Amino acid sequence: MDNKQKKFYFIAIGGVGMSGLAKYLLEMGCSVSGSDIKESKYTKKVENMGAVVYIGHDAAHIQSDMIVVASTAIHDDNPEIIRAKELGLKVLHRSDVLKMISEGLNDTAHENQQFIGFSGTHGKTTTSGLCSYVLEKAGYKPSYCVGGIIPDLDTNAEYQNGTDAGKFFVAELDESDGTIVKYHTNISVINNLEIDHVDFYKNGFQDLLDTFKIHINNMKQGGKVIVNKDCNGIKKLISDNPGRKFITYGIESGAVDYSARNLKFNEFGSEFDIFYHSEKILSSLKLTIPGKHNIYNALAVIAALNEENIDLERVKPHFETFSGMGRRFQKVAEFDGIRIYDDYAHHPTEIKTTLDSARLCNSNRLIAIFQPHRYTRLKGLWDDFLKSFGAVDKLIVVDVFSASENPIEGINSKAFVQCFENEDVTYIGGSMENAAGKIMPLLKSGDMVITLGAGDVTRIGPELVKLHEAQTAGI
Image (tube, rainbow, N blue to C red; front, top):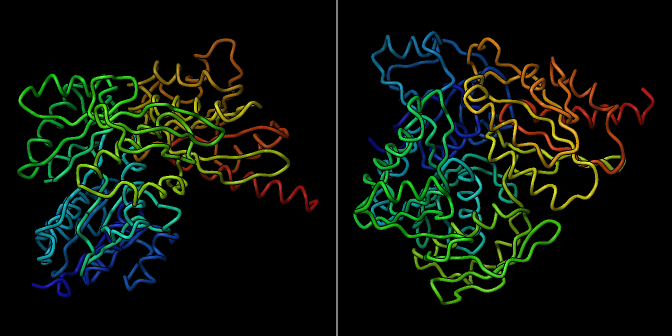
């Protein structure tokens, strides 16, 4: 069966990850259709490329010759899932499709393709996006599939095939549900390791280490593992795998293969030199995305590219023009001297890193609007969350985004706020529209406002803009 005969059906095609896979398959020549509960920019994009998109789930959409793909958020009582099982169809997880893509389907060109995978608890969207971006801008024509929109390329996936194209396949590999063990990479970059997803890793950090041990043992022959040695979790991974050679990078650590030195920070970026052991291989690499964590991200990408013998001078200028990934410290609005940013951070370490970076580039009042993501995460990391907001002048907490989880007694935003002492912390319940209406009077010129979370807290920025426009118009 050639690619044109393959018919993929995506249940929840409007998700950022699912839409990227759908786009990639369309570019490979496959037939793609799917459904979602509402229209979005992602459904429109794949529809404009030729996908058939239904709004609403209906068993009649499923045909016996389809390959059905379902988002993790889709439950067994979904009518399309039920129909697929009645027809004897295997329902694939998105990781199964990414695995198929990485192995080329029927594309013989993939046999010489280098699969570069980025993973870890934090930063995998940014590192995979940055790697894809600099390769694309430098003319290497990579194929890629990442978990967020690369603003400067306006896409999260691209299929390349032909002369001098598609040699590199870059992907974000998700560890949240253990599916990372499915992939067979040439290079695996592990940014960091820290316990998260306590709903899946029920036995804690050791479960996570065991999963990554399987992942690196499943790499292609001669595969290389690149890790951040400044991370304590990575140090444990290294000690647990004494027979494995790790290529290391770091800032604080002296005994690493790749290091960033001579760091200089400015308001919204940094500048530093990169060394391979004692040899300077790249001087004055510049970033226009803030924070020390982004130096680690750039260092991870440089290590991967250098191990693939990429001309670093050729890619170097494009690190400076990378403006970050969608929902990663992304400026969404400015009015009356108030700047509003949005960030996907939903783990205590990510939140602290984002807010510390914001504090470095802001001397005025810093306000965080936090939406806890999942009851299980809030419960499992409760004390760590409480310690994440030291950089802010004011914290506003909205209701938990459940992500289809059932509530847990005593675990909610109101109870969370009551655990703070002597800080300016406010709980605002209800919809994001309601929250925006109550937040607006609290803001003043000079404020930097950051919405934090993996749910719909991202809607608050646009809602604040609407309120400002209404006030200006005198409505």
